Image (cartoon, rainbow over all chains, first blue to last red; front, side, top):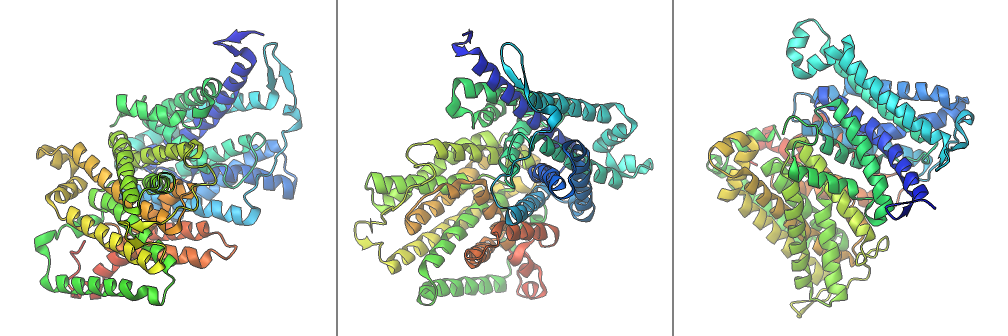
Length: 295
Length: 332
């Protein structure tokens, strides 16, 4: 058997793949957090709940309306995004004048309420969501066996990340967003509807989380608590990356996912905490984060 | 946090004498109530309430008086519970030594976590403390001495100073009450000391505090360790009251609960967190037997508090007409 660093290469590549998949979710979620924070100055604690909502919406759409995975991949983020926009419009927008900590506390309460409701309605146990037929099975790459769906997740989340980056960096709407991040009052004076832009941004962030949730549904079980522990890890990712740059959030997400996967190979006991340890080290060496601008 | 600015404007010398008298009367009435309460209320419930009230006051020391929102205080509360339970059960230490170890452990933990976390401010500080406490949670999940999912059970209460039998419910209650009062006095002294004044100045204007020559980082770390130690005191006593230490006390949900207690009662008020803790603990007790999950209510109360009730119960009372007439508007 081929060995690498004293480990069978299959085990090594298998964990690398799992790391890459986790990294895809970290990247998608921290990207959404960074987009929302950039404009709204709110840390969206409900991001994990919105991720869970995405997965649950896909499941419920299938159970009650027979809507398949592919349609759910579009419809679920749309529903969750609209819900997010509604919450921003009616409640969150009242908090912008205050200390940013209130936004964090509000979205924390929102997350608790959403997750509590789903646990009340559907129980804490996970429910399976089957892999779509077109993506079932796997391919033998010669050195390892790759389930098609997992490969799809890595590719499509990369596409989503780059798409969001292009939207923000290269389009006119994105330029408004970036301008409003720098100076909302001035942008408003130029006739851009900044409050609408804020609503749109929060909706977009929520939709991205829901998109990640639909992608995750066939891999992990769909359960009311699937987002809670994830969001704390994503917070650590965001602290490591610094929320100054969109690309930084994406790269950090993948890097830390892979670091976590590799830790599972070499020192499994520490795999739960490796991201937090990296966060602490980065804070000690470079408090602003790897890609951060402000301290 | 911003709204506490007005509360802080009337520090020390701005106090109306009438307010001080009313305030002292309130405190005495509260203490008298707590002294006789076990005659008509279930002692375990009261002790739980006192532990959480102390926990919330310790947390408020950091949020209300230094302006730092820690999302990881469960690590100190639950960590100290583990240390005390282990020392008392496995090493046969007396309760007071066990509690001391718990407090010291929490303070040590606070020193390490604080050292890392104070490198960033505001929202980042909250996220970092949350991540670090989650790391501690995973440590407790895997470490041997915490016994994983089972937790440390059947912790003996023992004899205080080898004299007073804490297995007697009344003795235990008055011991917890004494710890609670001592904790509050320590917090009150700390907040009104020169050290506490500097903390307030950091909360109000960090850049100016720096320019006045204060080493802001050291003061923040000092406040963090102090808050962690007092939270540890609450957790250590709780492990003796319930005679177990489990993972529940180190979860992020517990960190969220203490934030809610403080927010509900009134951030930056000395007695607000006590009321907040009382409400939350009562609510939990009330809902414990029903199917309805507490998290939904907790979440909704959080949202309502942040949207329309940011001053909390005591803060609203101080700002109300009655509160103003009694001279409380500058009270903190």
